[in-house]
Length: 329
Image 1 (tube, rainbow, N blue to C red):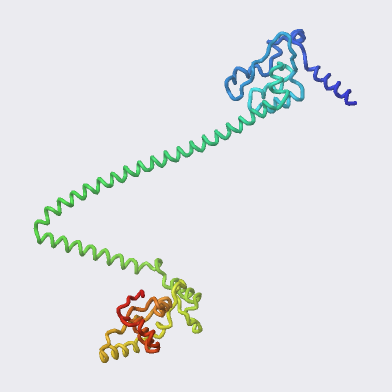
Image 2: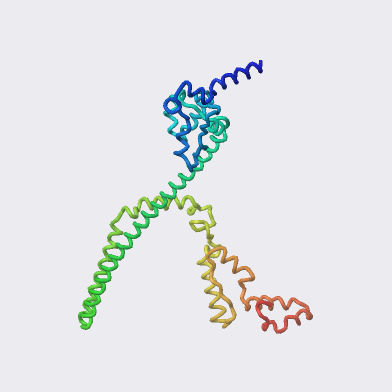
C-alpha cells in the first residue's frame, strides 16, 4: 500500500516537471511561459530579500507553478514580494527553475530567514519612530525655551530701562532734602494702603476661610483624639507626638511651692548652691530631669555628701576632697 502511494506522489510530481525542450514545443518561453521568480532577482539584488540568479540552461528540470506546495509558498511570500500577488491568479503561465525551487520551495529555510529579517526590520522601524518622536519633542522643547528666553530678555531689558530712568529721577530729586522726605512719605503711605487693602481682602473673602466649615473640622478632630474626654488623663498633641507631663497638670501648685522654696533658700537662708529646674512641659523632659544625666555637679556632690555619714571610717577616706573631683568621675 505504501509503495503504491509513493508511486502516485512521484507521478504527480513528475507531471509538473518538464524539460526545456518539451516546454518549447508547447509554449513560447519568452511570451507565454515565464520564470516565476526571475523578475525579482534584479529588483531585490543586494537587499535582505535577495534571490539567487535564475538558472536558464537548455536542459534542466523545470517545475510547474501550479502545485499545492508552490501555491502555499507563494502565498507566504506575498508579504515580502507584493509583485507575486498578481501572479498568484495565473500560476499556470509560470515555471520555476531548479535553483529557485531548491532555494524557496523545497524547504522552509528561506521563509524562516525572511521572517527573521522582517522582525528585525520592524524592530528597527519601531526604534526609529520612537527616536524620531523623541527628537520632535526635544525640538519643540528647545523652541519653547528659546522663545521663553527671548521673552525674558525683552522683559529684562524693559526693566533695565525703567530702572535707569528711576535712578536718574532719584539722583535728581534726592539732592533736595525736602523732596527726599516727601518721596519717603509717599512710599510709606502707598505701602500702608496696600497692606490695609490686602488685610481687608482676606477678611472679606469668606470662601477662603469659611468659619462654619473650619469649626466643624476642628470639632471632628477634637472628637477623634478624645481631647475633651473626661476619662482621658493623657493629654497629647494633635499628632500624638508629645504627651503633657504630670507636673504641668499641677503647674499652679508646683509653681507656688517653688516660689516658697526659693524665698526660703535664697532670701532667708542665703543658700546660693541650690539648683533650680524649670517645670517640665512634656513627659520626655520630666523623665530626663529625673535621670542621673540631668543632675549637675553640685547636685551629685550634695547627694554623695548626704550619704557619706552612713559609711564606715575606711570608706569615708575615699571621699576626702570630694568637691575637687570632676563630674565624670
